[in-house]
Image (tube, rainbow, N blue to C red; front, side, top):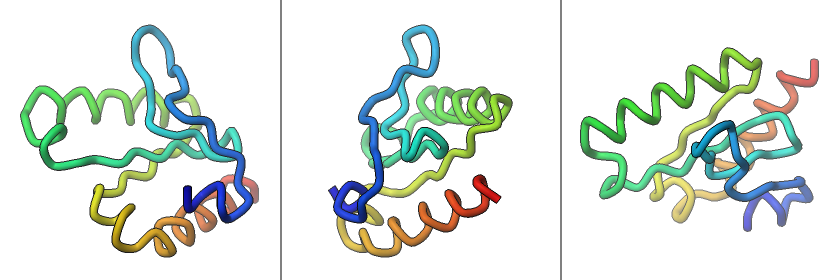
Length: 91
C-alpha cells in the first residue's frame, strides 16, 4: 500500500518463470520481497529465496528484501529505499 500510495506502479505476485513468484514488481524494474520470519526461517526457503534472487539479478532485475517488520513499522523507509533503487536502475 505504501508503494502505490507513493504513486508507483506495483504488480503483486508477478511470475518470474515456472512456478516461482515474487512478492512485488515495482515500475517493471525492481523486485521487492517481504520476508516474514515464520515463512523464511528454514534452510529450504532460505535457499529458494537466494536462487530466485540470483535468477532475477541475472536478468538485470535488482531484488530488495525487507522484513515484515520493515514493511509494517517503517513503510516510509521502504518506499525511500525502493525509490533509490529505481533511480539507480534508470540512470
